Length: 303
Image (cartoon, one colour):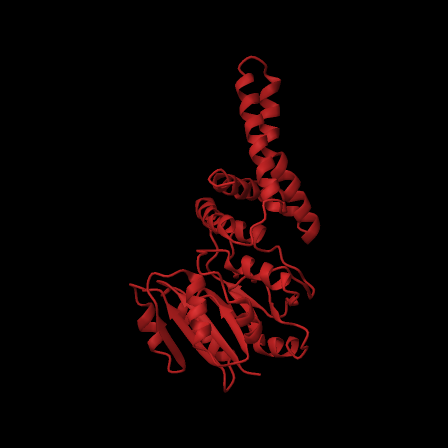
């Protein structure tokens, strides 16, 4: 079976050469490599044009979902592989994809990213939360997502109104239709573009949260939203306790504990889930930032 690789880009000169070298090293005869540029102003397009086997499409000022859809519209193969410009395919990537899709009951696959060798503490704590065995998935990140073309067309592709989290929305719709999505850790890639500072991490989660709430598949009673709302409630409690601490010193302690309660619970659950207990302190901080970004956007949601 042949694969169409679809890569959306915007000012990606830092990573696109490595990305395309990795894709082409795994691509077989009959595969397509389609890069869809969003109007880059750096050397991204120049680098892309230096690769003979790569088809370049240019669609300025549209969402990443729309870029993926434009690439899919220009493809002709039975499998669509959505790869991000800052993602590197690991050796035997294609072999593992071909292996999993011999099962006609599997409609989509891929895996969460591996970490780069120079990963910082944020990456090691947050992005190392990865299954080690093949399992059914609710969604797979769209930087390493492979879908049967017929299934993709039936679902209508990605929601072009979403600026981010199109993969989560796509996964929900795919599962709702009864299609099977399998996460396969052996379909390995390395993600080079993870945030490496708390400020960058907050901005990324704030950006993701905006599209999560805008998605047609958004459910107010899902776990992340419920925990975000509980976090917001604990913030109110903590402010009350901290204000009262001017009169009663013990209230200060309760104020601090109130802020950390939901992040600690989540960090402990994740540590248990992925056997990552040594990262509980780091995860507590990162989940506090995650929930802060979510609650900021929930307050804007038109209930």
